[in-house]
Every structure is written in structure tokens, then in C-alpha cells.
Amino acid sequence: MVRRIVPGGPDEHALSVPFDIWGALLVGAGLACLLVTVGEGGRWGWTSPWTVGFSVGAAILLASWELLDLRTDHPLINLRALHDTDVLLANGTAAGLGAALTLDRLPARRCPSR
View 1 (cartoon, helix red, strand yellow):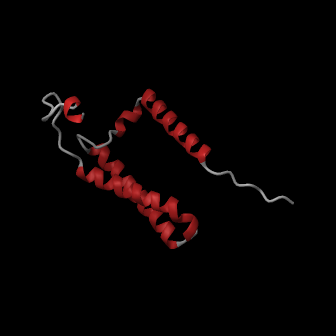
View 2 (spheres, rainbow, N blue to C red; view 1 turned 90 degrees about the horizontal axis):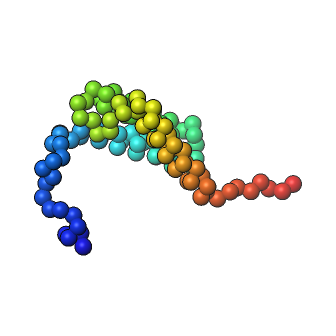
View 3 (tube, one colour; view 1 turned 90 degrees about the vertical axis):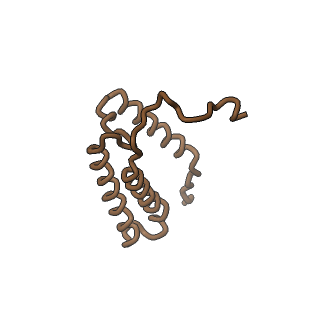
């Protein structure tokens, strides 16, 4: 099925730009540290050295990625597009709806009866 639908070979009309390997590594490592912080913070304790270390690591890696992204001619994710209010509104709306749908699926905690 895929062989019939998807054309073979490279796309001659697509732009040929270098892949931003450093941007990919920084954003990947930064998001991994952030996910470890959120996922394990409750078990480790929110003020434990591991949680704080992963939080600081995530902040440093993601800030470094942002600085690199703004100075790269062909970034992995173009943060300059967020200066457009329509793009910012669309991305904010999508993130808000995603968060709302995720929170809707979490089990509700019941308060103990007195």
C-alpha cells in the first residue's frame, strides 16, 4: 500500500538545508531532563538533589538550545516564528487544549470523609 501511495526517491522541490544536529541534541537532552524531573520528582522529593539537578540541567540545556536556535541560519525549530501573534495564539491554544485533555483523563482524588 505504501509503495503505491508514497512517491519514491528524493523530493527535487524540497529545500536542501543542513540538519541542525546541535539543536536536536540540546532540545532532546533538555526535554529528557525535564521529563525525568516531572516524572520522578514526586518519588524523589521535589527538593532532593536529583530533582533539583535535573531541573537545573533542563533549564541550562533548553536555554542553550534557545540561544543556538536564534543564531542558526536553519534551526531545527524556528523560534522566530513565535513573534507572529497568530502563530503564538495557535500554539498556545493547542498546548492549552492538550493540557486540558490530559488533565481530564487523570483520575480524580477523593478527599477522605470526616
